[in-house]
Amino acid sequence: MRECPRLVTCPFFNDKMANKPATAELYKQRYCRDDFESCARYMVFAKLGKEKVPGSLFPNDIKCARDILEKG
Ligand code: SF4
Image 1 (tube, rainbow, N blue to C red):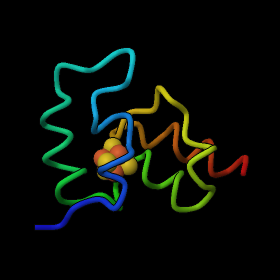
Image 2: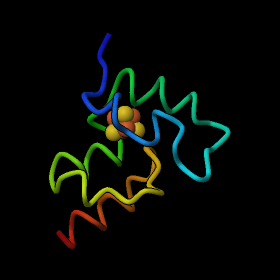
Image 3: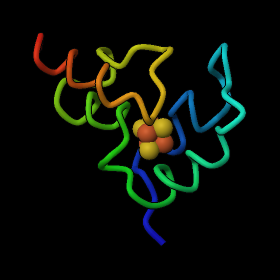
C-alpha cells in the first residue's frame, strides 16, 4: 500500500480541520493511502513547504493548489 509521507502530521488526515467534509474518508482512501502526489495539500507541501499549505485546503482542491503554486 502507498501512504502519504505526511500522514502523521497532516491536519486533514488527523481530522483537525474546522470543516471536515462528509467525503473525508473517501479522500483519505483515494489520496492519503494511495495517490498522494495528486493531493492538493501534498502538491503545495512538496513545492513550497508545509508553512504554505492553507489550513482549510482540501485534497481535491487542485485549482487552489495551482493558484498557490503559481504565486509561489
Ligand atoms: S491530505 Fe494530502 S498531504 Fe495530507 S496526508 Fe492526505 S495525501 Fe497527504
